[in-house]
Length: 415
Image 1 (tube, rainbow, N blue to C red):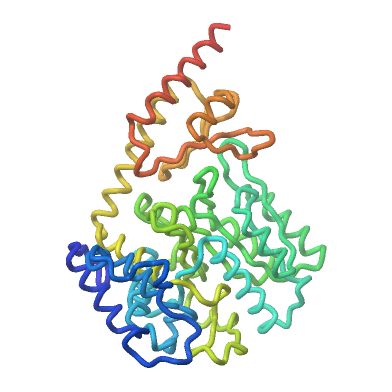
Image 2: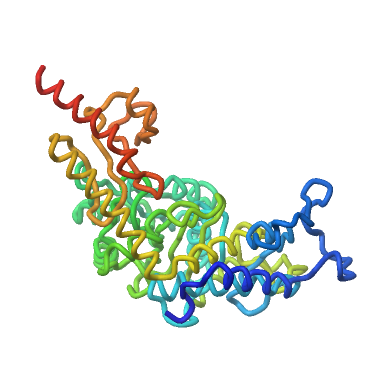
């Protein structure tokens, strides 16, 4: 690992404060043209003694604006110190987690997975319009019915149609024949270009799409396509739990990936990553942002540099081996839950490399689900409830739920 190495807390602190020292200091410099400053000093006390040992909180106070895309070479130089940390974070994620080529990807820290997914669809819509002279009604988003709702949101915002492929109720897998029929159906409606979104662990089930099904069907239909991977949930998990992962930049068909750091990484909410191969992000360039040094290639525009610093700090605190160990611990807990459910003959779905376990609703009551914070697939008529094995979800907290489910199952068998 070239960039991702475990650092001590002191090393992390020195690096972050060193980066902040390279950023503009509004109080010490005579800077007159930036519509921003440190956090308001009347509300946020900036001389608190604990801040000297709190690099993330200090970054919030200094308030760096990371507008633009810093992997392109030119950005607002006022915040170059913390921008360098974001650049390093992009390299760690794109090259060392997702197996991209050195300096072969662009990207930025987004507000979350929803924005990152929308960024991808925005870019590919513009790509097809620019390179194929496509009209919006010739472009179609293609994804599974288990995909995140951000795909439907993107279809609405960018004025393109969307087609949902069905998944098997029990295996959550795509059907080869149905995908081919769906593509033919869309072609009959005048669709010629496809933006494919493959899931690296869906939010509800933790299921993983077989990306080859999409690729082979679209190639057989002779349809141009671009493939985006929604790894908002699984991007920091699945590459460590499955060594044969095909949903990364080692797959030549994958052009972009979404990651979401406020899930498994436990970064502050509002922290995702968008990663894309070189020579594509310019399709989202807003040249009208001429007052921004380097212009703007992002959907969100201005964003806090503190979010990038937070993710970098977390990853560097663990290092690659510490992170792998964390994933293995969560997998072992999930395996324990599965064993308990199987002993009680409770039906469930779980991808073997995932930490999400989804139980059929007939095996529990709404009161039990509410008491343990289990999330339904549909709040109006739930068919499934999910357990997510996170850092705080230890066996001592899982055991009461398991005991209640077993008791309920035994009662139903007795009846």
